[in-house]
Structure formats: C-alpha cells, structure tokens
Amino acid sequence: MDETDQAIVRLLQRDGRLGHREIAEAVGLSRSAAAGRVQRLIETGQVVVRGVVHPAVLGRGSLAHVGLVVRGSAVAVAAEVAERDDTPFVSLASGRHGVLAEVRTSSPLAVDRAIAELRSLPGVQGVDTLSYVEVMRDVAGPVGDVVHQIDAVDVALLGVLQRDGRASYVDLARHVRLTPAGVRRRVIRLLESQVVHIGALVRQPGLDGQAALGMGLRLGGDSSDALERVLAVPQVSFLARTLGRFDVLVTLRAYDPADLLEGLEQIREVPGVNETECWTHLRVVKETYASEGLAV
Image (tube, rainbow, N blue to C red; front, side, top):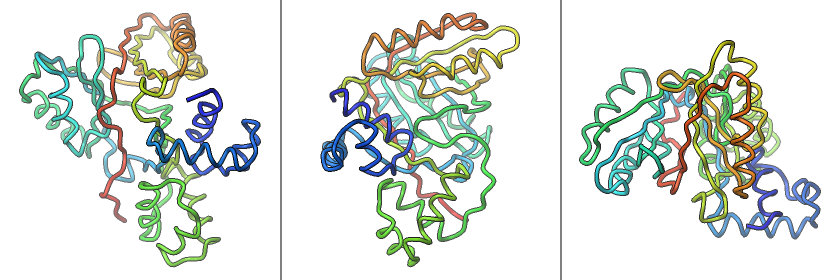
C-alpha cells in the first residue's frame, strides 16, 4: 500500500460505507481514481469491508482476551483455536504467549468452559485470561450500550452487511423487499444505535506494511485521565478495560514502524501508566466477526 491507499483504508475503517466522492475529496483524487483504488484493495483481498454486530445483540456479551503458553508448534495450536466459533480473533505473537485469542460467549460461565477447553489442547502449557470490563475503542466493531431493539427485517439486513458492508441500498432493498429509501433509514438507525459498525478490516498485518502491537497497561490512582490520554493516541485501534494481570488492553496499528514507536512512547509517558508490557502480532490467523446467530 502507498500513502494514498493507507489514507483510504483509515477512512473506510471509520465508515465502511463512505462514498467514492467523499473518499476522493478527502485524499485529493478524482472520483474514478478513488473508486479504482477502493475496488483494487477489496478485490486483492488486502481489505474487506463488513458489518460487525455488537456482541450483546448476538447474545455474546461476555468477552475475554486469552494468551496461550505453547510448547512446540504455535502454528498448530492457533489452527485448532481458530476452528472454534467463539474465537473471532486468533493471532500468532511474539513474547511469552505464542497464541493470542479473543473469546466471545454468552456468560462468564461459558468463558470459563471455553478456557478449560483451550487449556486441554495438545501443546498448550498454560492459559492467561483477561476479562473485558468495557471496550472503549474497537476499529472492527461497535462499542457502548445497545438500546435499539431489532426486528426480522433488521436481522436480514445485518446478515447481508456482515458479508458485504458496502452492499448498495438497491441490493439491500431487493433482499428485504423494501424501498431503497426505507432500507437507508434502517441502516442509518442501526449504525447510530451502535447495533453494527461497518468498517474496513485489513488482512494480514505485516504483509501489507501494517504492523500490530499489543500492550498491557497497569495503572495507578484515578485512571480516568490516563484512559482519555491513551485513547487520544492516533495509533490506538483497540482499547478495553480489563480484569486480570493488566488494567487495560491496547492494540496499536501503523504502517510506519516509526509511527508505531511514537504511539508506544506516547503511552509510556502518560501520567498514571505505571507499567507496560508489549507483544507483536506476527500473523493474524483468524479475524472474522460475522455470526449466523442473529435472532429477534
């Protein structure tokens, strides 16, 4: 990716349905040139634009970050973990934990069962778990509370948007047998109520020039100001308050290693951040947040 591609991806991460005209104006291209770049990024598989439904809507409101201590091949263990339907994210990482995963389930007891099953996998020597208290930023999915009640038409729309976040209103209308204007109103309502976030997911950090760095933070005193300062760091793509060995879990993403280092240094200098521990996501094995479990 060149700098223009990177700028387009950042725009699509915030709003995956952004029009070609708006993209062109933001990056200084013609509409046709912007459309060509978006099409190339999607067709080559470097980027996918999909709707990610709020975990609570899916009945999977209990989330945890799991680090697996592996003896032998971490690749083999990651492949087994990725087969589970309750692990939307799995990566091979540097550091103590050769495999990292996110678990999304219906309850804390279900998380406990999932951890027990992961602990019993061949090659797994230990499991460290962080329970999410609150997700404050997620480039892939919506955050906050959900108050909007979905109906059968919303479910149908969400099913399509999970597969193709840039599906046209005409195509969506044909699928649910409404007018394009009616579908547009529903999609906007689903977005504004945090039921779904539609954005770009970059495939294989590292192969496209993007690096992903994980951080665990231990805070001291009143953490509210420290959290706001960390959230203000541009490279932060994910932040969750957690229970466990860390108070906060952070992911930084950048295309330039110098930018990644700059973000890391900014977080280290935040008053109230007492300790940091870092690891690199070397290869993303699985990153899919689609679910067939939508129901009203």
